[in-house]
Image 1 (cartoon, rainbow, N blue to C red):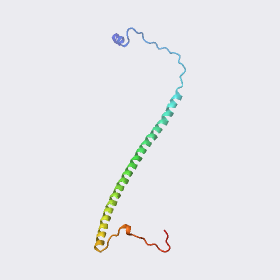
Image 2: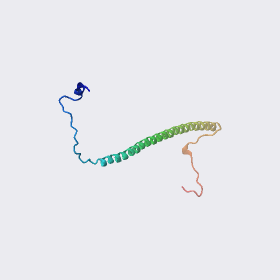
Image 3: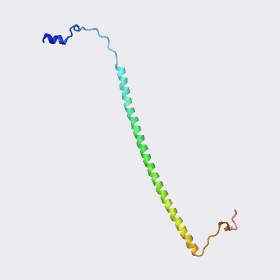
Image 4: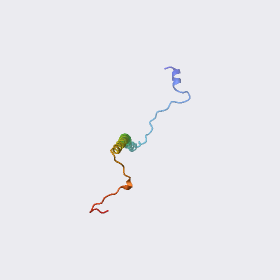
Length: 124
């Protein structure tokens, strides 16, 4: 190696660091903290998975209820439409029956002229 390369490798104003074996202090015990983190991580991951799974389950259940509610509302509207159609048909036929009765000589009696007969054993 050239002198120039050696000079570029080490700064001029600093001496090279000396490597001496320093007495080592007793190593700290870090294991309980690491175990606590592992235990905590081992509990948090399944807990988070269960929580997220519960949220997904609730949303799916809500969607199912909404869909079922929509079906019930549509069916109720269909039943109302059918009922309305049948009431209109009944009114039309009722009018036809009354017209045919008038043609046959029948007349409608006012409601205040109606009397009820009572039998011998009946009490009111």
